[in-house]
Image (cartoon, rainbow, N blue to C red):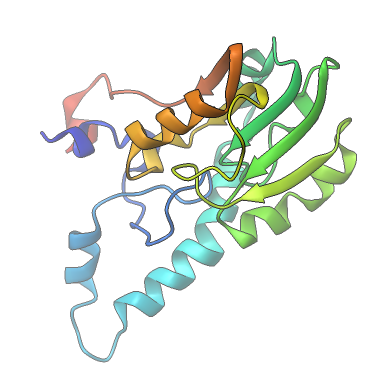
Length: 193
C-alpha cells in the first residue's frame, strides 16, 4: 500500500484533478481513470474537467455537511480569533461556525464553483469573508499577518503539503495557530486498496 492509497479516506473512487487542491476537489488515482477513458472518442480531460469543476464541489458540499462532520467542524473552529486565513474555503461550510472573536476571514479557494456555492453562507457570515488567493502553496500575503489559519479536509488534496505548511508558518503571527480537520489513515487496509 502506498502513502497515497493509505490516505484516500473519504476520497476513494473520486477522480484526480489538475486544480491544485480544494475541499471541493479531492484527489485519487488519475491513471486508473485515464485507462477507463482510453477510447479516442472520449476525452479524459473533458470528462475529468466536468467532473472536478462541476460535480465534485457539490458532492463535497453534501458529504462534508452531515451532522457528525459539522460537529467536528464546530470543534476545530473553536478558539479562532482575530484575522483568520481559511485555506480550502470550498462551499463555505465553516462560515456559520466562526466564533465571535473572529474579526475577518481571508479565503483561499481555487474552485470557482465552490466559491459560487458559498455565496449565501458568506453573506450570512458574522464576519467579512474575502477571497484572497487560489493556491495554498503560494499564499499572497505578507509575513506574520494572521492570528490563525484554518483548513478542513484540504491538506490531503494539496500536491506539496510541506510547501503549504511552510507558507502557513510564514503568514502566522508569533503565537498564532493552525486549526485543521483532516481524515486519516483508514483503520482497515482494504478500504485504501
